[in-house]
Image (cartoon, rainbow, N blue to C red; front, side, top):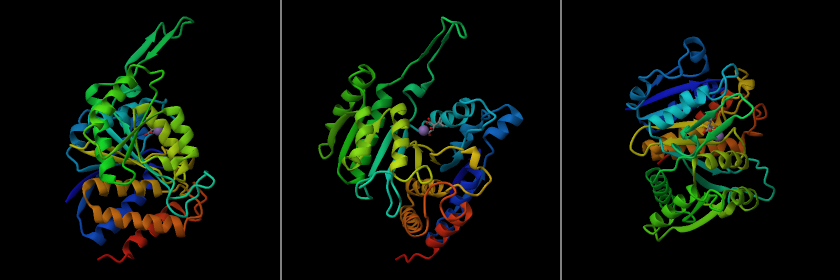
Length: 355
Ligand code: IPM
Ligand code: MN
């Protein structure tokens, strides 16, 4: 029996999570695993009502679950940063979800803005460090609001944090067993302290993985190659900030925010799965948003829980629906409503032959 904490959150979060849960039920009926869910109302509405982002008991309580399934946080009436830092980043940090795993995979039949590139070319995974870097929140203001104001925000890179991230990426690359190539994405020509540490650790740890080819590239070049030659990537490892930026680029080349999912992974604890597109308040309540990213996040959750067969069945159902049914991945252009897309995936799960 799996225990899953559900945080639907803000904006379109609840709508897409409802479809993910619909599909989860179909997969569990098909494969036979059991689960229960507990829903938490963390998000902008709760914050507006109570002034609290997360109760202090939240992380201890959430760490008792097998997984967390998150919709989105971000509310138009709440100042930027409050919910992001107070909920999303706080959970990532306090639950020590030190990996943000973001597959960039173009499914057949899905349109990419990259002319001449197809599913064989766009299939890689970004391993983003998820607890340090510029996200650590160190820094502050001097003389705030004055004309001689100073704002400082520094990137925190610990050997422990860098090493566990890089080691995870090597292991992941080996397990994935495709090109067996790990690319370190950095900026050693300018960030000569932070990425010096990353590069040294990359080669030190890499010596233990003689079967994995090592490549280093600057983040700006990576952006160019993600557009020009995405086929050169297998697994890319990088820090928190660069990982945030390059995975939005990744999301667009795999078909857009309607399909991109990620996992905040603590390999020794509880992990949290989310569509990466945010709360998109302008689409909330309209039934036009594509729930496929949330459904893909559910597929990653099953995979990490060890429900390999369930994850495979769900991925096959996702592929069937995106390649034969949906006209477009973008909100309002799927040819179906949010809940109809969930129905299609649930049917594709139930209708599958399994041996
Ligand atoms: C993401 C988001 C978050 C991040 C925001 C909402 C804090 O952009 O998950 O990529 O920057 O990590
Ligand atoms: Mn982001």
